[in-house]
Image (tube, rainbow, N blue to C red):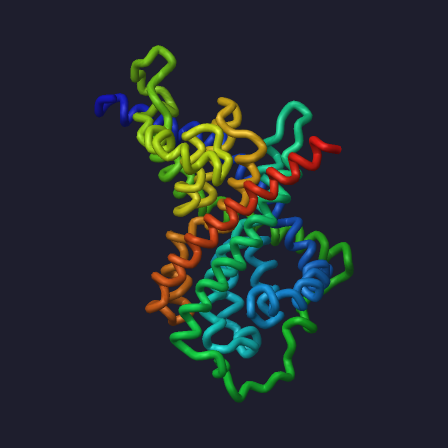
Amino acid sequence: MGLANMFKTMMATAHDLILNTVVFIMGVAVLASAFAEILTEFGIVAVMNKLLSPIIKPLFDLPGVASLGIITTYLSDNPAIISLASQIGFKKYFKKYQLPALTNLGTAFGMGLIVTTFMIAQSKNGDSFLAPVIIGNIGAFIGSIISVRIMMRYTKKEYGTDEYVFPNMNASYDMLKDRKIRDGNAFQRFLEALLDGGKNGVQLAISIIPGVVIICTLVMMLTNGPSEAGTYTGAAYEGIGALTWIGGKLKFILSPIFGFSSPEALAFPLTSLGSVGAALGLVPKMLSKGLIGKTEIAVFTAMGMCWSGYLSTHVAMMDALDMRKLTSKAIISHTIGGLGGGIAARFIYLIYSWIVAVL
């Protein structure tokens, strides 16, 4: 490739990513965050909370209030659950062995709404990605259960199963029944929620720009090959094809388990380990080249949501919970959970496709 062409390709790829991917993700983030804030302000999230709470205990072995963590991270990003976990009114419902699993629970749903809306928006020519994306969400949910349950096998050994975080806490304030709203009439509250949500979306989008530009540029250069003429020109998106070569060697595993039709698809889950925003940046190019289809969209949605850059957030999140010694266990659990979510999405979509074909 040569040093000169390498730097030219890096700059050209980063520039194109900012213009054609980052700005689009920012638009999605602003709209999704504004919508999420409206849902929160007018009690829709509270209703969803009440519906989810009864199933949290049997599925996750967590108190019902953990549903707040699912909803807040789905509407924003992984660290949102840490702001909840810092509130005494939230933590008082948890036993000691349950609290560390919040990191896995929150990460499994981080940036869920943005990943979902981004993937749906990629459909072209009247084709719809709605079904694959919904199936991907189901896969991520399954992955979250796997991740949390495995994590709790470690935490039960560490803390036992009886002691609460705050054994003598007064339970008069219930986060599931009480919520704060803005001042003013309905229209004023609507406008404020819309604008505040939009601002949050901008902040979220800006925070993922380094990941998208740096990681995505690196992954693109490791995935793609030279120009169509077989030479390196320094143009955007040229590369050495290392990940494609690795994916080709692993195709006998990737194809039956995840349904990947091309080795280049391996780049998405690998990138989402560090940044799901960067991983999303890979999707438009893959679609335009015909490297991925609906099966991959379902699997990408599941693994992108479930992993959502956990290698870059797990350490800080566990540190914030003051449980740094369990960080490696959280990472191992979540790695398995993400793989499980991707496999689940692959086979659920396979069954769905078969049913549609029969009908």
